[in-house]
Length: 210
Ligand code: URA
Image 1 (tube, rainbow, N blue to C red):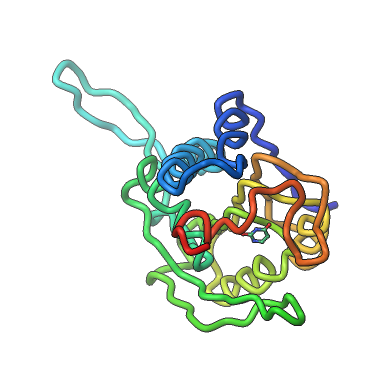
Image 2: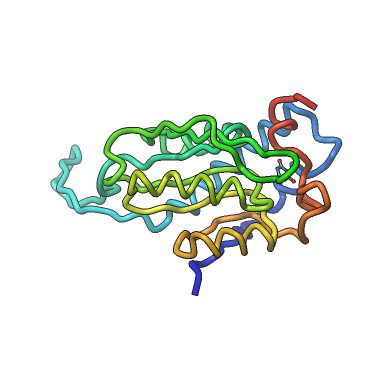
């Protein structure tokens, strides 16, 4: 039984995602919306991070509070489109560390080829949150998780905004224990590996490279 797929159906997420999808949305608005959506997704994906109890002094009394346990969370950005998600997430978790996985999609095979990999130290004590706006074929996600697992993080979660049944199935097949957080499960893939209805090429729309 694979880990859960959490579809974040908060009204604000659905509203902003609809604006993001529109082909008439400008580059500036696309960036802003992606940042806002990422912050909301960060809130959901960190919901069950483990806490530890601490004793603190307020100006009035001694009390018991809770802090996120262990070393700082690491956001693992799948380049290039994952960059679009990072700022919004760091807005919610400003102390997080950031790792990068550079992958490009071979246009013939649609498979992921790695060109860059850099993680912070102490990965065994960190909770890793892998971010990429689109879970399409799932090839990049699987390749990124294969490499990430070599660093043995304490836990792994995967966050995207738009996913499809093919990508989810592929990820589940190779990494069944990794929970997926998404704002939408779309219909499927077209012949070019794009999600339908999707939002087009997230990297091109974020960087204005189309
Ligand atoms: N990558 C994108 O940016 N968009 C898709 O639809 C599929 C992969």
